[in-house]
Amino acid sequence: MPQLEVQPCPDAEGPSHLFYLSSLRRPVVDRAEGIYVWTTDGRRFIDGSSGAMVVNIGHSNLNVLNAMKRQMEKATFAYRLHFQNEPAEELARDLARQLPQGLNRIFFVSGGSEATESCIKLARQWAVATGRSKRWKVITRFPSYHGSTLGSLSVTGDDALAETFTPIMRVMPTVPAPTVWRDRDTISIEQQGLRYADTLEEKILAEGPETVLAFIMEPVGGAATAALVAPDSYYPRVREICDRYGILLIHDEVMSGCGRTGKFLGGDHWNCRPDIVALSKGLGSGYAPLGALAAPMRLVEPLLASGGFQHSHTYAGNPLACAAGLAVLDEMHRLDLIANAAVMGDVLIDELKALQKRFPFIVDARGKGLLLGAEMVADPETLRPIDPARNGTQRLLDLAYARGLIIYGRKVKGGVEGDNFMVAPPMIITRGQVGEMIAIIGDSLDALAAELDLPVEG
Image 1 (cartoon, rainbow, N blue to C red):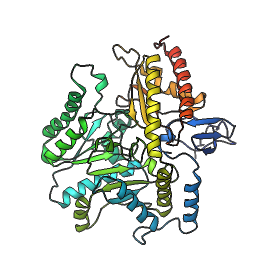
Image 2: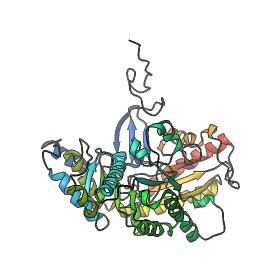
Image 3: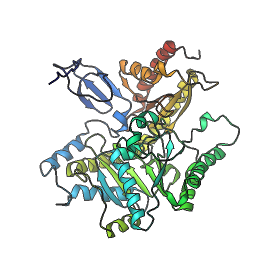
Image 4: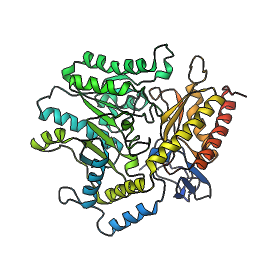
């Protein structure tokens, strides 16, 4: 038997047998509280990205931990085919009250990829159950990110993630994400939004309306587009087009949902009316793996009448996870965190726009609430991207990390090039903590500019 080659972990005794995205090693976490994380060697980090935009209510909230402890003393697992459980029932009721009218049937899962894949499978089964079996295509945006299972990856517009797996999945058709800041044309913002929305109708007609099942989109972009927000005119036109052709509109609110943008759903900023919603991340806030699909009874009833939803997960509706989610939502309301996300988001976006003036290679700062991002280029006049070989995004993340701040970022032009950073701290953040983050980001951008010879004002 061949010997395993394992790398020593810098802050732990003995080698590690784990492997994840890369061989990059990090210090060992010791504890976390509020917006801070400490490592075993005594360093303190500001969690400026809430992990991967997950820990909406902050780390180590005692009320959530106590609710989980109470549930652990009762039951940690109850299989949904054998028992109902009160935490799942109560969490479903709580969610239904906060979602747009009619989205009152909930299916729990354990994460974002499961949530978006469940939405796709629900849509397809509804079509089959109602005599629309020719409809199977799910149009998505490029770039976009909807998950890493084969089903969710098939609607993820990201060449770097999908290329290896293309032979074993059916890649779905795409339309351009509304990156209006790159267009540099003379039409109004409203016209730009309508133009991007109309690419959906063009794609529907090109594919054949009778074959198109759904359109999936992030109301506020996630990792693939660094908090991209479309012009206001985009959202109602998309809804109008979906209605015109009998197509289901799926909102991926895995990252933008559960209060992060200053509304319970990102789509609530435009009074959007999705047919199906995917939730995760902030729903469990890092306390337990948790996600959900929300749909109206008009879509669920035909499935139930034809034999049920042909889809399941072992931990669907797990009582411990749902007890955590219920306590997370309680804390969100008790602390008025959605309002705080809106207020602190306004403070933070103003600070990012100030950095944009100081560092002209930041060409767009955007987002809603505490889901914010900024895009970087080598030349602000031509919008020439930073040479991918220079690893601009990762270098900035590393420079901030070395200074005690965790921020997020990945390539935003299909995963191949295009540099950015995302700032999405827990919704409990204060004005003083925003200032602390911005100071570190500024220092890190200074260092990045010196390394990559990027322009700086003053």
